[in-house]
Image 1 (tube, rainbow, N blue to C red):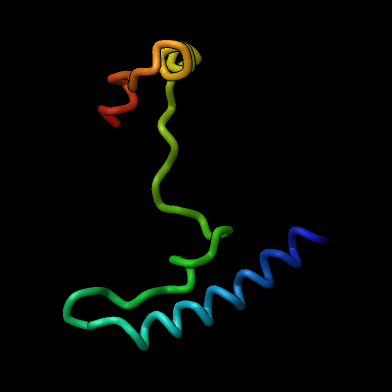
Image 2 (cartoon, helix red, strand yellow; image 1 turned 60 degrees about the vertical axis):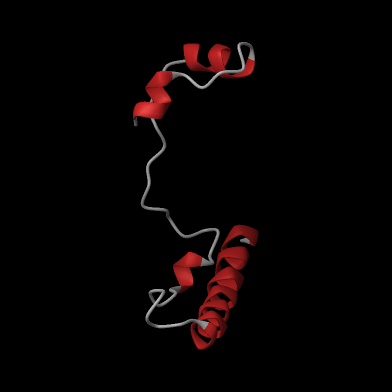
Length: 72
């Protein structure tokens, strides 16, 4: 129930944030904001890359970004 309450509260808050942001934007330079732009619970259109566990060693031990992640 707490998660549902948080989602509901963020839904209302993000609607207000989009309304305020749209009053301050330049229509020629930026598209209209949507509530989903401000809602942390809204699903993003970008999927997380699917890579193997070996990538963790490369990132955290070797401290380099593997080419598999950069290509996606």
